[in-house]
Amino acid sequence: MRSGIGDYIMKKKDTFKIGELSKLFDIGVDSIRYYEKVGILHPVRNDENNYRMYTIDDVRRLALIRELLGLSFSTDQIREYDEDRNVESTTELLQTELDVVDSEIAKLKATRDSIQNRLDTITSLGSMTSQDTFEKVLIKEFPDRGCVMVTDDNLPDDYVSYYVVKYMQCHHTKIDTIGACDCYTLDIPGSNPKSKYYRTKNVFFYAPYVEKTECNYTLPAGRYISLTYRGALTKTRELLPKLYEYAKSHQLQLAGDPIEMCHIDDYETNDENEYIIELQIRLK
Image (tube, rainbow, N blue to C red; front, top):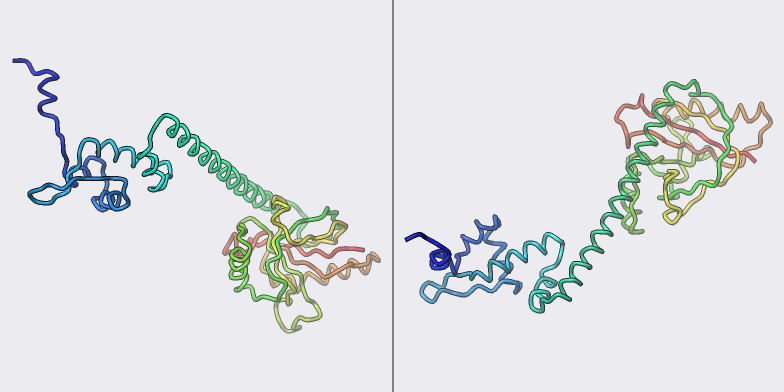
């Protein structure tokens, strides 16, 4: 006699052991036990040996659980949905997940834009190697520049990252340090003349793509005298006097303390020869 659909129905499997479900769905038995614990899977017990036995409906339910977990639904949401499943609740569930996915896409786009902006910044700075502008004094005009002030205290370099993390925790925000410009207002009178470095008054980060809502400090618009150099930060001590000499010889009045802007430093490279540092002083 030829086998047909009737034979298939006679041979179909009605119950499954936990190991069989584990193999079928390629998941651990602990996960299946957890689904039972939180009330979204309901196996029966074998009267003879008390083993968990899962019905064909449990297979359907487990397939649903895995699908919804993959869509980031919680076990509570899955239980509520399965208990009252209809076309309306299914539509609402999928719309909710669509909204979540759209939100994640927006976040990913913002992350991509941030990465692209930082990459563009580093790439444009790298092109400065072919320009004959290093260690020359220039006058630059800037609009207001929004910044994120991390601390208005003097900090050793080793502690900057620590305070950046503290700032992010306290303000529930994110500061991307790679590709951003970490800046320091220099305290010339308070500096040790024997030190290789100037004492600093504060630490802030600047990047042209930072959202205004994230900024808590502004570099005022106006003209600045500027000098950019490549190399170790110790060169600031050597080159900063050139700005003061230039201002004096051109009868320019200074409006504030010098700023050390680290366009490329140890956030981007371990090689001090690749550092690109800009010194700026605002003019009256």
